[in-house]
Image: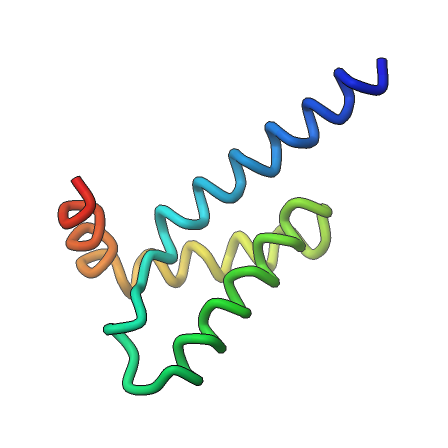
Length: 83
């Protein structure tokens, strides 16, 4: 029972991380400084952890949707670059 339960938690985390990384896909070159890039990574990780833990999910989902709208062209370019 415990293994199945932790397996589901792991699958949930992997799913959330894949989704977030497909949206928040900026690279270090996209930032004027390393500090700004690190701040971006920290913010993304904070959102990811909160989604995994179920903390403030509606606010985070709204923030993700807003980011997707504002950066849709860049997100598509990064996905194309990866493919």
